[in-house]
Length: 139
Image (cartoon, rainbow, N blue to C red; front, side, top):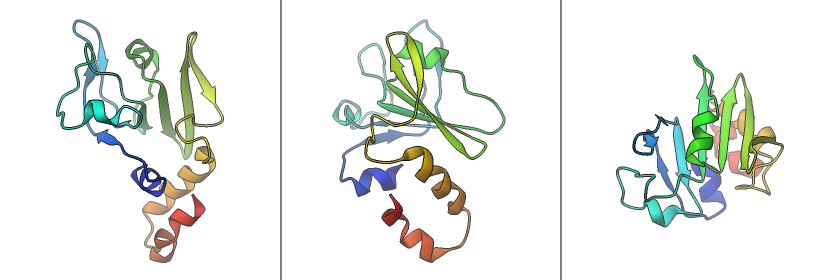
């Protein structure tokens, strides 16, 4: 994710981990989340108070041992959630009716996220430095 943001020369502030919740409501802790459009709202903060701070623009979950549900994300109004599960990325975009499975990320409209990122993630664990050095070319 940060490689993609750097490649696009975008500002961001990321958290991993961070607990997202509103007072007296259920919360959650995404594997990682990013403030991209709202990066200045999160700059310098160690804690996020969703009573006054906006939710992150993008939350990412990696499902290995448990499955992510979107109910709390919807309650917290996180605009976009990616879930990586079994080598595939699902992109969920918040609408008035709830989350909709999307073929494309509104945060990265020019990138085929579902095609590029799973291959990138799979290759991260392999010692192919030539591929890693040239990985931005595929993005």
